[in-house]
Length: 334
Ligand code: P6P
Image 1 (cartoon, rainbow, N blue to C red):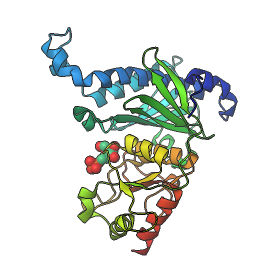
Image 2 (cartoon, helix red, strand yellow):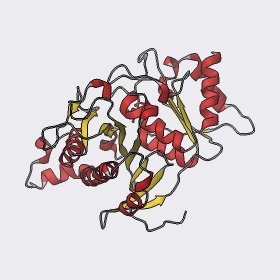
Image 3 (tube, helix red, strand yellow):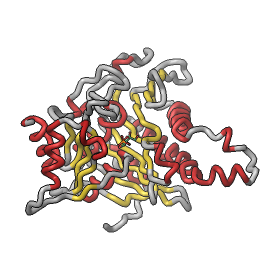
């Protein structure tokens, strides 16, 4: 894939006109996420050195004082978004309640709210497996200038104005959409600039990877058990390949590029599934739809679900449209 040497900054300026209603605030919002991602990336990459640096008597004794990286990432994104006076509210997996943000004029007159999982899959850091940040952006629904309320956050996923993720992997990438397709930008750490490396990302027509934690098989609903068996049958286009990293952003990113389906179903242990609707499933579902794929809870489109709680969980099936359709068929006929 030819890499145009267009930087993320140039891309945002070039596509500014596509941001509906935006007078540049959405661009500034994406820019602030870009900056925060660079700071978090630097810390994530150092994670493996914490013990060594601590043993070498580094200035700050990181062993004891080292913040958990997901707490650190949460603070960096909140601080960056707050300082730029772009959003009027933030919800995060790391915060029990949403945060209301006033501008310097002591008013909540910014128009966007951000919901995020600042460092998804952070338990994988200890084993050097890639992790990610997931973000979801809405226009507020309550009057400008008033404090945000829970209603600004409990919006269905199909009302998102933008969403995306950062994957801190063998290279660091930002993949996002503002409703006009999906574009991926790879960070050149030597100069701290992201370059458009994956323009107009789309799921391949057919997918052959299924990603699910089969260790939970006995707890899965019958429909999912039947779908997994279907994936394993010896047919003209199967068996599929099973790939499961245990990091949603990495599993989704690979499936988006190579074609596949990610499944985290409800189980007898987790009757609503494990993944969070507002800041994991909805943003990933938004990207999937923009890339020609789709998402479901097994019965309805994830993006159509009206949220009732900030941290609610949903069963999540996401990937190639044909694969999600087939998984839904098994769920609905079980
Ligand atoms: P399990 C990480 O904790 C996460 O939220 C997702 O990133 C990942 O896909 C899933 O949970 C892994 O969960 O139960 O398979 O270890």
